[in-house]
Length: 280
Image 1 (spheres, one colour):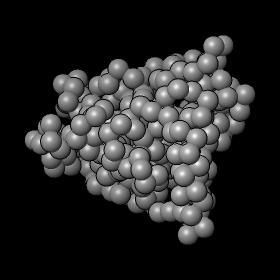
Image 2 (tube, helix red, strand yellow):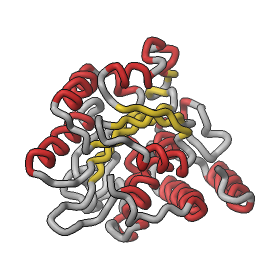
Image 3 (spheres, rainbow, N blue to C red):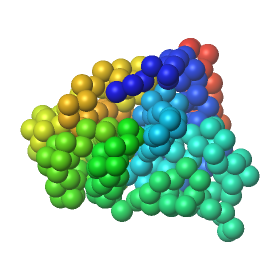
C-alpha cells in the first residue's frame, strides 16, 4: 500500500494521546457515567489510524475510512474527530445531553461517522462489505476497523473472516483491541480457547501480527509493512483503562465517571507521564 505521503511522528502521537485522555476525563465530569476504560484501551490504535495511516482523497479515489465496531469506545473516536476539526468543541460539550448529536455509541450521519455501531459483532461485516464494494468499483480506498476482543464471541465475526480472503478483500485493515475484558469479566477466563488469537486469524487466511496496542510506532509499522496479499488483522494487546492507575484492569471502570478527587488524581498521573516523555 502507498503510505509515503503520511508522516509518522512518535513524539507528537504520544503527546496527542495524553491530550485526548485529558479531554475524555474532562467530559466525564459532565455526565453521570461513560465508557472510559474501553476508550482508553483503544486510544493509541484510533489515534494512529486517524493521524498517521488514513490517506486523504486522491485523484479518482475516495479517502480511506474508519469503522469503530466496538462502539462503546466512541470517546476515542469522538476526541480524535474533534482534534481534526471534524466535530466541533460545542458539539462535544453536548455529549449525551439533550439537544446534542453525540450519544454513547456512534451514529451514522454524525460528521466523521461512517457506520452506526455498538451492537457487537457487526462492524467487521460492514467493513468487509465496504471494502469489497470498493474493490469491485476499482477504488483504492482502505477500510480500517477496530473491534473488541469480547465481540470475537459472535459467530458473524468468524463468518466474515472466512469470506474476506475468499473474495480477496485485501483493502481492509482490522484491529482487535485485546484488553482481555468483556464488560465485567476477563475474556481469557470466560473464553480461554480464543487464545492464541493470532493463530486462529491466520488459519482463516488473514495476514496477522501481534503488537503492543499502546505503542503507536509498532501499530504504524505493522500496517505499513503489510504485504497486501491478504486482509490484515492486527492483534493489539492493550490494558483496559490505560494511563490511569486506579482504572487499569479494574472491571468497574467499564462504565463509570470519576469523582472530583479521582478526576484530579487522573490528571496528575497524566501530567507525570507528560513530564516523563509521553507515558509510552
